[in-house]
Image: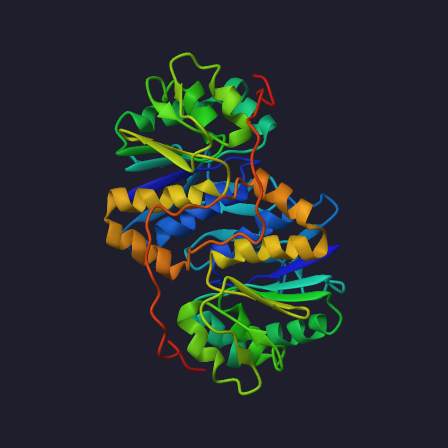
Length: 207
Length: 207
């Protein structure tokens, strides 16, 4: 089984690393690939450089497509700029993937590719108003960690990808496997501070 | 302010990426550096290659030293093998760092460097029996997310680093800043499965 995580410059680090950590503990037979337009270095939002070993051209049909988010400039570049080849890659893969997943604003990229039409989805809480611009998408109420609608699994902001990827482990394998991953990652979170989210009123960028 | 995250081959990805994500949202003036023996590529436990832009030689006094964990082979290499220069680096930095932190089995590396003697600490739940071999270390009861004892902040396994780094933001800045980071990361975790941890009976490796 191959899980392909799409990466691109200014992608958010934890949007990639959280799910990858979860999924690589699932089963040694599951391969988690970072895939960019072309193999090579990718620099995340916070300036970390990681290597994408695979490009679009050498990627076979994926079992799972995972699309992370980024800062607005990078999103816009893919949604309507020179990065539109990512949307084409997503469309080609989504047609036969077992699951199509996004975390954070990755949902906006899937939405722009038309891949969330007719589905109920979510995204980073501050970008939920952006999703409302797509008339055929149902936006899930509140700020859920993730939303599963048939084979579309969309997550909330950044850290949500960990909960969401654990759900994916449960879907692809079993609850017991997800519990095993939870144990090895010691994922019994307990944030040292508490806060609340206001409802976001407007999309923080345009495209 | 410079936070230095020590990296080495077979380091755990989320031990590095979780805290880095949290700390890079804290304040644009805080620099979070990945530091290896020498600048260059580091391959994590799960086969992801990231670039460490800094080496020991070009690292000034850090404000915060952060030591992540890894698989047992990599730990052993640093504790008693050819990686002992990492322990020397930790000792030199810890003498004047504001905070000395570990997550996961990074605590064993600090312990072997003598830097946890006289402190109460924790580590990945399955490796807690390893800590008990150090007679001058007090092992915190249970499997806490993190333990703060004066300027030593030690975390539990893998995912604990996110809670722990948020605590570090609170210590270095304020509760309000930590809440802001929590919001931007949408860190309101809610794992889709539940499980429990048994008490670990023996250290899973020797050194």
